[in-house]
Image (cartoon, rainbow, N blue to C red; front, side, top):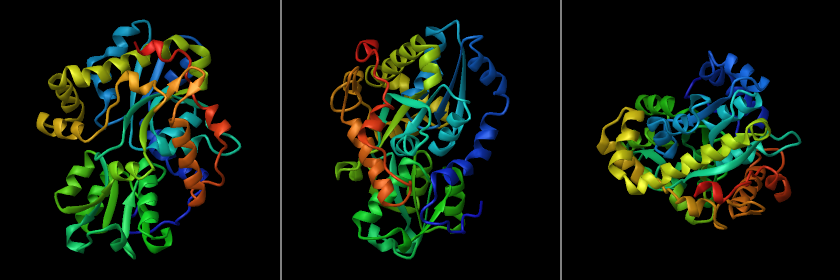
Length: 353
């Protein structure tokens, strides 16, 4: 993928998903037998997609909380770089549970054939851990100054959505800039070569860009202005039918991880540092940039909601899809009723206690 080559401003969902296929194929190499076994209803298995990003997911993985809670299941953790890749993997029936940004989730539930999954948990709310950075050498100090410049971001991600929102708020159209679809590591390489002028991306790449860049805005600011983004966790429809108890257990250990972030800050910092291969000082700084809800907040009316009563996340996802449709990033926005069908709230809030 050439970082200097601009892409069309309005990629279709099909193109976005197809473009992720190579990444997914690599990520899932050796997992085909897991897929067949899980689908056949044989051995109990859970294939979990995660990101190398500071969150409760890394604590669950590092401490093997799910493996301890489900000793009769084979747990496979599969790392992904973007939500587009996660969406493609669900279409390929290669995942049971995965982290997924609210923007790629909104894309996934859009269209006549929505991806067969449902949101079941909220991992975190985007804050200063996702941001728009311009190279200091460009002299750009605000979003409006990006007109005519080349900006990189992982397409179909929360960063992509927030970038579009930032450009719109600054009075810029997509055609006013050159957007380049790059994953975090290629963004860093393109930045170092001077191929791009700015980037909207998340940690840990974000902190590397900050060393030689100027922050123009963040997902915290964009969220406060009415367009919040979140890191969600989704479960396949097949898993809901096959093993709903495993979903309850998984949500309970994710809730435990959220509590540990507050009750054992030193220990969780070490967990994240180990998982990401960074210093504890860097892990602590990165965790401080995220917004982590309590389990009680996750299941509240302000966020995910409870069984039979979805919370404000329903509005956030619906509004996100509407915005993406207006930006011609998807063909049409789903109705709120269609989005509601993609919520799995059974057992909430009790399973989080």
